[in-house]
Length: 228
Ligand code: ADE
Image (cartoon, rainbow, N blue to C red; front, side, top):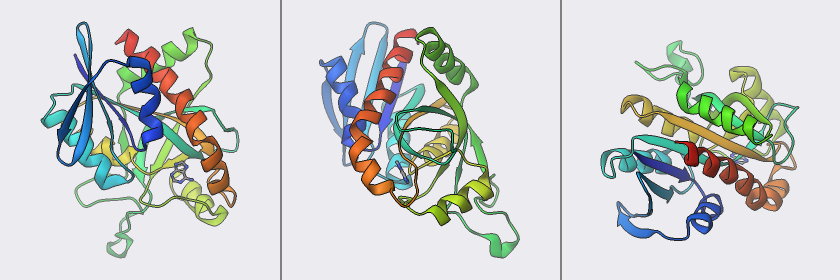
């Protein structure tokens, strides 16, 4: 099985590359992909770069060029759900794009023509993530993840996203990868660890916890890959 693992930032894939150590470096489509041979499994790891377009490009490349049969997104997110603390893990049950607005045509926020507001992640991969978390005594929340090409660092915008989409966490890549995987029939799992609360202190918190939270997320992903 060929598994694609995407992180948006270098910090989000570094723990994986440090863990697997032995990899081949492949250049394609303006990006670098790291190929890890793990017996019957092959991993293709990449840093997509930030945002919906870059992450959609990376997911498409992984599936159509490298033949990835599963995609796991690993990284950090801003917490919207007040129960979430820094370093807590969230599994995305479904994802939406909070910055899509064709409401002028009578559609809800986040809706695309001939599309839908929410895209589901894969129940089998999510089941595995939950089982692995349980087995290792790791608390894993399951929630709605809202994606957009904006770093959210404002209480007002965060509250609006929460009200409009009932979102629990916010980031900048998950929903675009979900649309790619949905259309290309490739199971997707999105795991994120909280780095900030997307409010007025978000930037300071993000800068402080990006690396440590990315390691928390990667550690669960590595355990999942062992079981795939
Ligand atoms: N990723 C981590 N924190 C975030 C935030 N506050 N907004 C968008 N993406 C994020």
